[in-house]
Image (cartoon, rainbow, N blue to C red; front, top):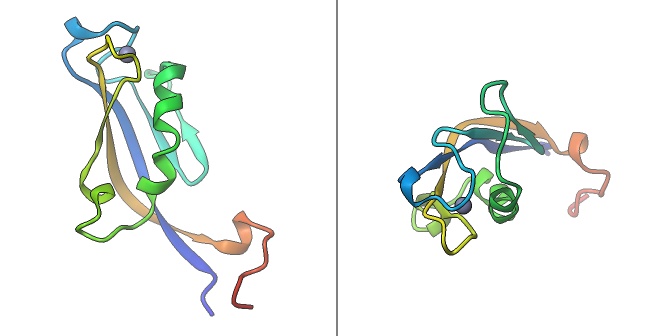
Amino acid sequence: MKDTFTLYTLDVSVTGDPHTFACGHTIGHAFTAKGENIIFDELNNQFSMYALAALLPLLPAKQRPTVANDWMTSDDTIACPDPHCGAQFVISRRDQTTYQRSDVTKTPHPTL
Ligand SMILES: [Zn+2]
């Protein structure tokens, strides 16, 4: 039995009209979600923790391959959780990486 699965690497970036921002967002600030890690590059090294809190529950689902009719496949724009803020965050799927199940969990495989 194959002990592998694939996940998309995600890029998440700030978009929208900066004149509508109530928070300290900056267009183009971004991070990458690869496997279990959130990666900030040196130039885009800050991101609203409130926005991050709104985004985090969606990232593991967006990392997983989905069928074409699943809204998780197509919907990629998330609003800032501040109702007075016009910022949006775009989640872009990049390449897929293959992971070894036994490298990321100690839970026995359910079919073994
Ligand atoms: Zn905001």
